[in-house]
Image (cartoon, rainbow, N blue to C red; front, side, top):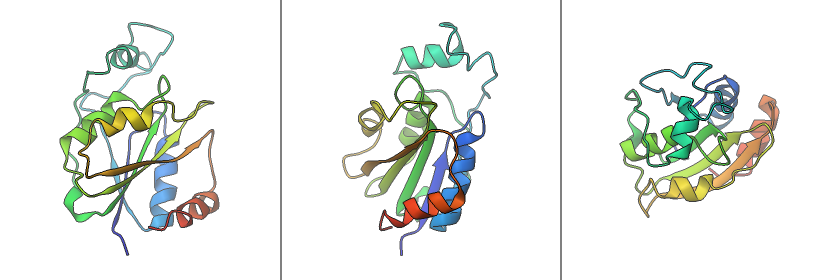
Amino acid sequence: MSKVLVAYFSTRGITADAAKKIAAAAGGTLCEIKPETEYSDADLDWRDKSSRSSVEMQHKELRPAILPTDVNIAEFDVLFLGFPIWWYTAPTIVNTFLESYNFDGKRIILFATSGSSGFGSALADLKKSVSNTAKIEEGTVVHGTQSAEEWEKWVKTLSI
């Protein structure tokens, strides 16, 4: 059986809730991707072109600093990687996470939360941040919340 890590970035708690349910369903360890500087409500105002999140997403090369994680990534075979969809992709802080650790040979399954959009360019954008030996794949995007039972059903379809 694979050893599972569920890493996630969440600003409003929706992705965190999903990550906790996935970790329970998969018997995984939780790992929050924490920004060095927390995002304020003003930072997350997508209508303001000068807000922190808007600037980061306009300049895809930016890598917001993260706090070090307390888990040893090398111990895990499978990584569920969760994030909210921002501008039809993953927030660039997720790239920071992927570029900060070695994911060679690991299976990375994406999950995302969104008000209405799908993955957009998230898979292609995130593939650029891992080695060719990492197996990164789209998992699911949820609009709103799902029950623990729904997450458990989804996890069972993945053969982990």
